Image 1 (cartoon, helix red, strand yellow):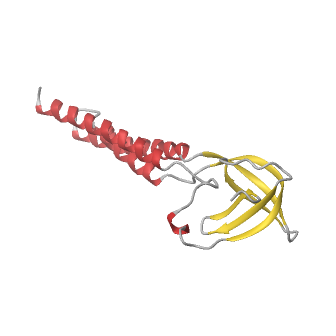
Image 2 (cartoon, rainbow, N blue to C red):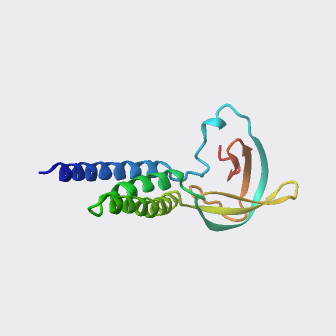
Image 3 (cartoon, rainbow, N blue to C red):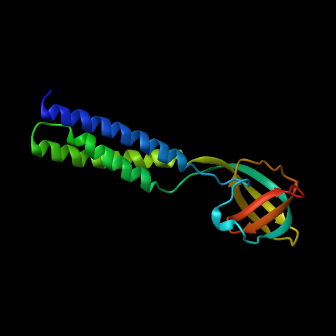
Length: 165
């Protein structure tokens, strides 16, 4: 095996390992926005609880705006893979640049897809008569007409059936 082919084989194994790490990192970034989730910043914080009734509900898709991790990792992996193309320095440089661009686009799309989850948009009439829409993850479905406790806290607004806690 020549030095060049050994380098390319090692680079290919590194790229495969990096791709596996990217997949695991993106899986860890999946959106969790349901009523059963709390962030560390909400621990020890008081929340205000209002009462109301669900007027209507519709299913929504909760999608991340962008994926910085996916874009960066895709660009790095694309650059590594693209640099393996061609025989000369110019061809390898062009391949690395093209691979980084395509990898960044693909990584961003993969990051968005991983960060997509189902949710519900609830229109709620508060006991004060005020009406608001509150969107949350699909871990709990609350039917129209159900009395709810509306929790306003460090993690935003969440709905739970009245008396459920």
